Length: 361
Image 1 (cartoon, rainbow, N blue to C red):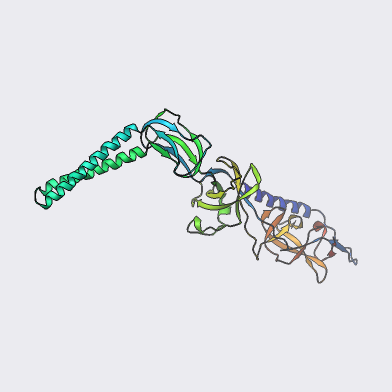
Image 2 (tube, rainbow, N blue to C red):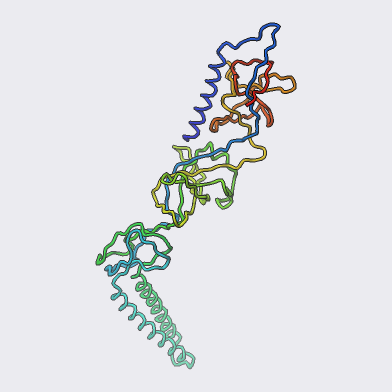
C-alpha cells in the first residue's frame, strides 16, 4: 500500500512540475532567423529499468511445534537446553516411567493369558467340547486384553518426549522434578534452516499475477528473494508456499507466505524483520520508460515529450500517457515506441518544429 501511495505522489509531482514549467513563457522563433541548438537525446528501449517490489514482514520458522507429554507424571530428566540443536527422534525430556512400566507388564500378562485361553477354547470348539458362545467370549477377552496391552505400551512410550523434526529448542517451560499433566506445553521446537516470511501484498500488485491452481504452480525462480534488516546485503532465494485468496477487508491486502533457506554459516531466528523482494524478469518486449526530466505538461493536464526527427533535424510535440513511476523514470503506456529519440535537456524552451542537433558528450 505504501508503494502505491508513493507511486501516486510521484506521478502527481511529475505532472505538477511539468505544468509549472510549461506555464513559463517559451521563446518564439525570430522571423526570418533559423536557430539550431544542441539538445541531449535519449533513445527509448536502450536500458529498461529493473522494477523491484518490496513487502515488509518478519521471519518465522516453517516447522514450529509446542511439544507436550501425552501422559501425566513427574519429570525425571531434561536432556536439552534452550538454543540447543536437536535431530528428529531425539529424546528431549523423560517422565518417571515406573507406574507405566508396571501397568505395561500387567497388561502383557493379561494379554498372554487371554491368548492361551483363546487357543484352548478354539481347539475345544473343534471337538465340540465348548459352546460357540463360550468360544466367542474367550475371543472377546483376548481382543480386550490386546487393546489394553497396546494402550499400556503407548503410555509407557509416551513417558519419553521426542523431537518430531530436526530443529532448535526455542523455549523450555519445565524443570526437573516438575509434575506435569497430559497435553501441558513444555517445550517449543522450531526448524532451524527452513524459514519463512509472511507479507501483505496490496491488491494493486496482486492483480498483476496470473491465475494458478495452487502455490506449487508459481515459478518465480531468480525473481523472488528474502532479506533481513540485520543483513541488508544478503539475499536468500524464496518460494511461495501459501497465499490467501481473499483480501483483508481493512488493509485490502493478500497474505503471501514465502519460504527460504539460509546457509549453515548464517544464523537467523524467528522475529527478525525484513522484506520480501520481487524483481520481475525483463522481457524482449519490455515496457517503454522515459526520464522524468524529459516530460512536459500541457495546461489540459496532458503530458508530452519532444520527439526528435533525424531526417529534418527538428523536434515535434508527442503526447504520451503516463504509467507507474520507477526510480527516476516513468512508464509510458502509449505514444512512443522502442527506438524513438526524445529530448531530455532544455525541454521547457523548445517548441514544435524547433531545429536541433544531438549534443555530443
